[in-house]
Image (cartoon, rainbow, N blue to C red; front, side, top):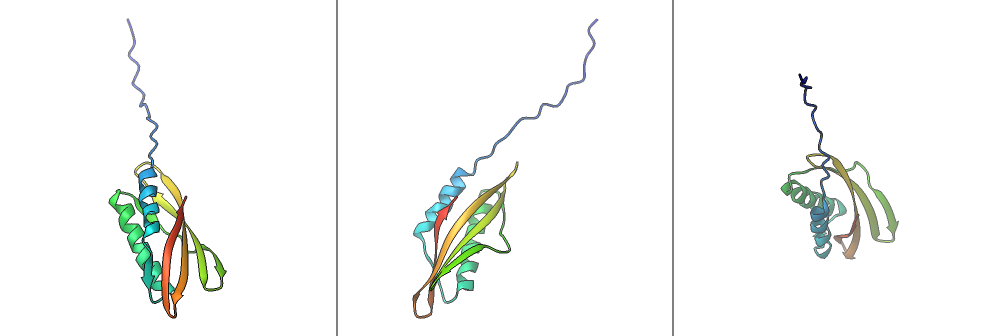
Length: 114
């Protein structure tokens, strides 16, 4: 007689890709954001990024601080975003450039997504 062994749960390895999301974020490099202050542009950019990420069913965690460099009136920021998918957490690095293009007018543009 054959004894029946209890079935073990087989865990499937799932690897979720966020390549499409990254491509959509890269497409934002062609859409500069304008505002009267750096704070206004950061708020607009954050809102736009959050809407895109949530449309994929993911959650995003923005950093409290970003790595930044300043050259005259040009500010370079690198934001390490944590994107929570259904199965894991991925990191995406968003490089953004902010600059004064007119007396008191600011422009922000995404320069790279890694």
